[in-house]
Amino acid sequence: MRLTVIGTGYLGAVHAACMADIGHDVLGVDVDPEKITALTEGRTPFYEPGLDDVLARTLASGRLRFTTSLREAAAHGEVHFICVGTPQQPGSPAADLRHVDAVVDGLAPHLPASCLVVGKSTVPVGTTSRLTTRIADLAPAGVRAAVAWNPEFLREGFAVEDTLHPDRLVVGATSREADDTLRRVYAPMLAAGVPYISTDPNTAELVKVAANSFLATKISFINAMAEVCDAVGADVATLADALGHDSRIGRRFLNAGIGFGGGCLPKDIRAFTARAEELGVGTAVAFLDQVDAINQRQRTRTVALARRTAGGDLTGLRVTVLGATFKPNSDDVRDSPALAIASALHHEGADVRVHDPEGTANAQLAHPELSCSTDLLTACQGTELVLHLTEWSQYRELDPFKLARAVRTPLLIDGRNALAHAEWRAAGWTVRALGRPAPTNHTDADRPHDPLRTTVASPSTEVDRTTALA
Ligand code: UGA
Image (tube, rainbow, N blue to C red):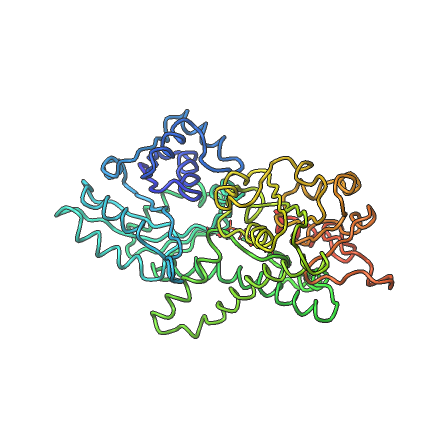
């Protein structure tokens, strides 16, 4: 099928390459000529494991091309996927739909024949219906363009895998024809047994924001429990393991720490509350304000823990932050809790060095005040406090004995509760974490929780935990 994918960011570049990989003839479109040149030359403009390979083989097959021209896109596609960003509006919790609207305005007047426009971006409920009218007004007389919504659930870091092997496909369409067209687009996934949920556009749009709201709520729930644990010296990691054994609850997304960030969860819960207010049902999702507040509080609580650990004053303290991205296996630093904490420590007078395997360029752009490095030992040399804030696997593989020799003071705050605390303590480190008791002389309370090798978790929980961390 002839498809266009408009917007080649984290979502669109992956979607375009994967659709070409399953056999479609795909034209990727973006307003940024530099991105288009890079993609045409097989260079991915961001770090996403596996994408380079798919891009290389689909470009070589001739089934994937890129352009900046919406006119060319209009001529090419029987199905047009909208994959542009829907960021938070400056000064408002609501979503900014200007990119989505610009695509429709640029595409519709050039449509040569009837076609299907499919939104994949995360949008406020009601957008499909609004765009249907907008396209009908702008398309040439006689051209019919149906609009459907097909939200995307991919995770950064696993984007290729999630696109080729999604756990479900959700399609909100108003006609049988549109639904059938999307079933043809996704035929290989349907043949592989991927559940296909066919519904109306409002429901499809809501599925996406509801899913992200649920995930955000789950993370904030365990972080709220971490706050309670801190008040009584209880252990949130053991609590999460124990909760996770209940299959109705599950262990994934119950990792307490510095909270969620990125270009999706934070802005999606805010946009949802704004849209619900407009619809007169703001109270139904008012709890999301608390979810957001709990999440933000983990950042200030981590800074406070660093200050306490340093004896009340961070001025002049040499601090190393491990991790700049909002999650591992990505170079994305949008709304990164790690960077927000690093910046706050800097503003309290600490001498902060940030290490990240992939995110230093983006981190340096977003926070020029911070000193960023890809060399771990240099970043740690002579430091007085290490904060582990993004759970890259290489941090779990660190040798705490070796690192103890490089630093000035072996003091660790594990902001992701993902390191083997027992091993770090055995190597002479003082380890602190939110929601985790400081060791006492009592042997049980002193038992450091090692989330990856926990003795209380069953093997299946360990798998869950590792996947959740990944
Ligand atoms: C999220 C959703 O998981 C995807 O399903 C969705 O498609 C995507 O947003 C989107 O809307 O485009 P993503 O932003 O890639 O995906 O990141 P997540 O894996 O959800 O992680 C979000 C944040 O939560 C990260 O900062 C992560 O470190 C944090 N997190 C995750 C926790 O603090 N604790 C956990 O237990 C899990």
